[in-house]
Amino acid sequence: MSSKTGPDSAHSADVTIIGAGPVGLFAVFECGMLGLTCQVVDSLSGIGGQCSALYPEKPIYDIPAWPQINAGELIDKLAEQAAPFKPSYILGQKIVSIGGKAGEWQLLSDKGEAFHSRAIIIAAGAGAFGPNRPPLEGIEDYEDHSVFYMIRNKDMFQDQQIVIAGGGDSAVDWALALADIAAKVTLMHRRAKFRAAPESVSRMEKLAAEGKIDLCVPAQLAGLEGQDGILSGVQVQFEDGSEKIIPARYLLPFYGLAASLGPIAEWNLEIDGQTVKTTSSTSQTNIAGIYAIGDIAAYEHKLKLILTGFAEAAQAAHAIYRQINPDKALHMEYSTTKGLPGGLPGRG
Image (cartoon, rainbow, N blue to C red; front, top):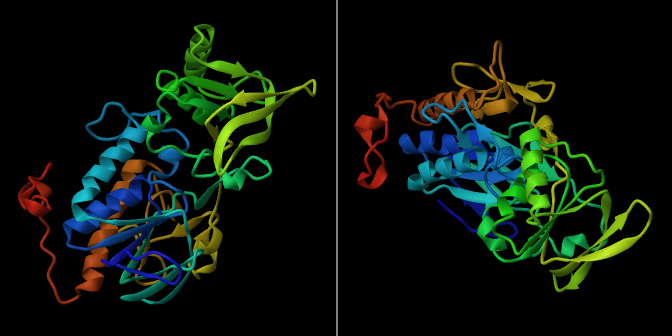
């Protein structure tokens, strides 16, 4: 599998998976168990989709064998499960056009990178995501250095001064998660009332009373101070017009993500609102060689659950194997019998 980078470079694999959310990650495992290589493309800067970007600390209760698992931990487990198959992750860019036909697809990203594969799986959730950026002059210079819209490794904030902006679940959850890690966490919101889960807000208020979280409300972001992409302070403005600088090495703005089908709507797929119509038994779209799984896939009586998407990933992988290998019989084997690559034992 190629992993070249740079303008006009080409990546190649049996399957291109568009979307690195939980269903896309599980598709890597299902394809890998059939000997199919995968490359995964996502518009976000990290894997995990909404689970990582919106609610990494939120518990999920309907994953089989896990009475409760946090969304971020689920992503970590899925990435671990996919790792033996050595997928290529291409992050921070989105597929804008596709050409060719089943067995010979060519895809192009918004950064000019080319992708070749024999099948395509669209696992884009509600569509392409991008952060709602604060309207601050020069913020682009600080992105990926001091300004982050999603977090993959909270240890990077050890003993650092952090400003978190927002009033929803993501902002409050990360304030709670980083309170014992960072040197100082300031949570800023334009209103005094937060929109997060009541239990989380209660925990946040308790930590604020203990001095472990500084609340800056109501206030809005007004500017950034720093040099060479490294923040030294965040300027905030209060309702009365007064301003102050909060010393900070990092700014984490959690103003939600904008989602849309984007270029997917122009690929001649059969669209139903913000979803793509598929055949329930194979997850194939109206175009041979292109499959859709997870929340973006639609068919009669569809249940929009993560576990439904997992099943669709398995169906798509088997359908792709038959598409790529029409003359080979596919003998169904359970993972407990087949095991994993490299001699690792199967887990069931």
